[in-house]
Image 1 (spheres, rainbow, N blue to C red):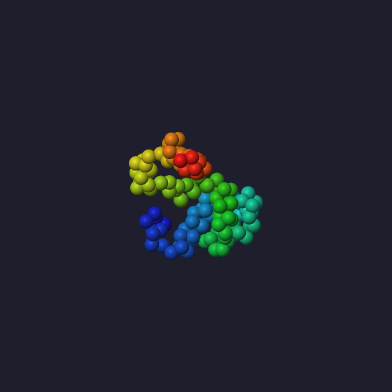
Image 2: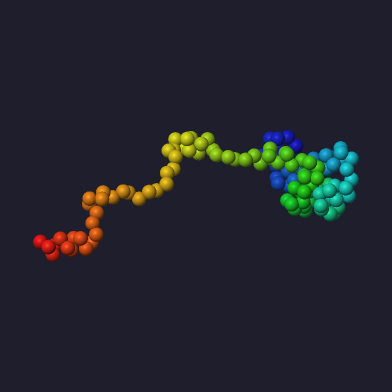
Length: 124
């Protein structure tokens, strides 16, 4: 299956293509289903289902099989880190650094205890 074909393909077709690739890699490396199952920590029937075009295996089993075949480095290409979008990067660049909120300073001359005002009226 070619790169552009994935956009138009059904999920089942993509699943079949991925399973066929994994099966081809297993066979090219001359690894038996039993050995792959043991190294991946899954049952042999899981490997057999995968060989039958990926019917009924879990994502966990799929990842375990990729690890056993040392194919996990390819996951970054499958789902690259989205990071910040160019628009978000521009917004972040133009923002001033955030500062901690601080209370406003009061002028000491304008500040008085509540009873000071009361005493001033009594002495007048």
